[in-house]
Image (spheres, rainbow, N blue to C red):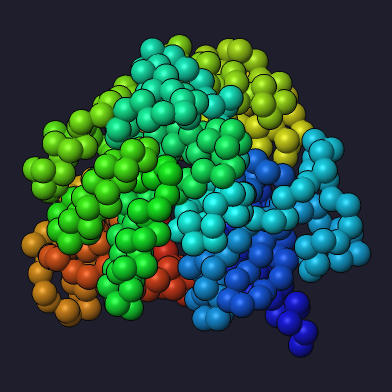
Length: 470
Ligand code: ADP
Ligand code: MG
């Protein structure tokens, strides 16, 4: 059997499972149009017809596809979603450079190269490039919509990007999830690189900073590590709350930070809280972080949300009735990321079914999302319902008992916790008697597997899911 045909068969099975999980409608809208590309170095490429779909599949289904596929074929480690128009004679495009491709809007698709922007756009030395994370090409000042909640942060970011001196050090941006912190940081980096390519700009998450630091420790290479950071012109560290409680990383960060500020290099930090509210941070670091300009981004207002939607609709050239945009701005209030996600979903759906966007179709498409935003299930509720359903004690959700009669329901509860909440695997593990995240992962796989082989079991799980969501 050829490699391609066995891939196609695996894909058929994965799709079958997905269809059972997500239901007929979602399956038809999102999953049916996908085709398998290549399998290379543990990575499966899946081809989608449009960019909207790509983004949507990436955020909503890619993890699931990978999990199911590695169940079929343990060699599969990752799944990449790529825009490509499938050709008739050759259902899978095997050569990325093949044939002129176009997405459905008729624009040429120049994006078979997946990672948006090579870090090598920096004019700096190789080392600095290696350190810096890639920048998202959409995250520019031009694409940032300014309103009351973010005007201070925006103005401060502009100032830092444009001025030749160091106007305030550090610039500390803080605000909730999905409100534009990363966007502003990338925008600063783009602007500086454009204005003066010789300046070395490093952008990275605090998590990555820590990772690099730990690696340097392991390879006894901390001198080189220090050098790399201390020779940059602009250092940006995103989500610095991540290093709360990580003492030696904080220590290193503190020294790097001081060294840069002393040399009058610009430092830009983001976090989800203000410096003084950062728990688990050393006092001297907290106070140091607050020395420059602290700019917070407030939750979005209706006006800002509408502005963002309008801008985004214009940018993608989609015709969306103002009523629909207003509806979204009213309903999706959590953060900008979800707002963009819902817009993408509506546009992608309209493209697929070939109908104009209306208020009704938007409500329909966002049905589950709107319901989810009305109601959030907690892990405790899940445990309670599942325990009741299987007639076991609630305490057994966290107990050490391994008899199947309690272990199986516990696995189901973990599975539902993964599906229905935003909690991470370690967080879920903790709620189940401090179990390891690999135990949760195993539970999720196991339940998946059983759902595929045991229809009665699958029905139980589905029933529980409905009750919890309802
Ligand atoms: P954070 O880092 O604060 O969690 P991001 O910067 O990643 O949030 O923003 C989430 C998404 O919302 C991104 O796609 C970003 O482009 C978009 N976004 C946030 N604020 C704005 C804004 N004011 N104008 C345009 N897009 C925005
Ligand atoms: Mg961010």
